[in-house]
Length: 223
Image (cartoon, rainbow, N blue to C red; front, side, top):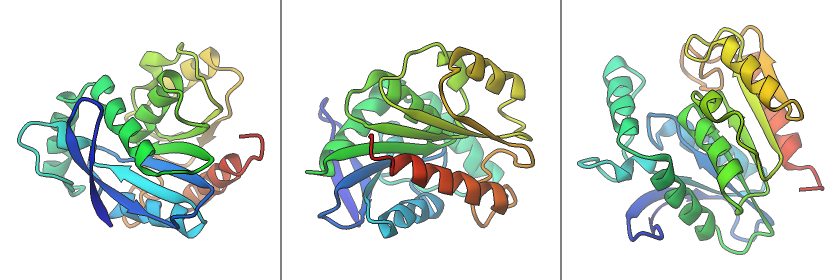
C-alpha cells in the first residue's frame, strides 16, 4: 500500500509499504532513476514474500514540481526526466527520506537496505553515513566510485554487470582496490540494470544469482 511519511526536516513524501507487520527484519528498497514504479514494487513484493517488512521511499518527491510517488517509464523521455530530477536532489536530502522510511518500518530487530542504479549508489552512501542499517546490498550503483574510499559502518555487498556501459570496469576495479574486504560480484555477461525483469536489460541468469546472493547475505545470522 502507499503511505505518506515525514522526514526530519518536515518534508512529506510517498512510500510503498508491503510485507508482514510482525516481520523480524525490515528492508528499505531504493529505486532507480525511474521512481517507485512497477519494477521496484515487484522487487519489494519479492522480499515481502520472503517474510521481510519492506518499504520503498519515493525519493523524487523532493524535486520541485514532481508529483507524489512519481513513476517513470524506461523510454528516452522517462530516462531524461529521471536524470534531470536526480540532479536536483542532494545525497543528504535523500538520506533524510531513507532514514524516515526505515523508521516507518516499526519494531523490527534489524533493518537492511538495498537499491538499484541510483538506489544502489544511495545504499552505499547509507552504509557509510547512517547508523540505522545492519547491512546493504548495492546493485549496479553508478557513482559509487566517487565515494569508494569512504568507510562502511556495516557489512556491504555489491553487484555489477561486466558489460555495463554506464559503469566501466575501471570504476569497479577502483572500488575493489579501495574496499578489498567487500564481496563485490561481477556478472561478466550482464549489462546495466540486469535485474530489471521485463526489459531488454534483463539478464536472467545474472539476476537470479545476484538475488540468491542478496538473500543469503541478508539472512546471515551475524547481522
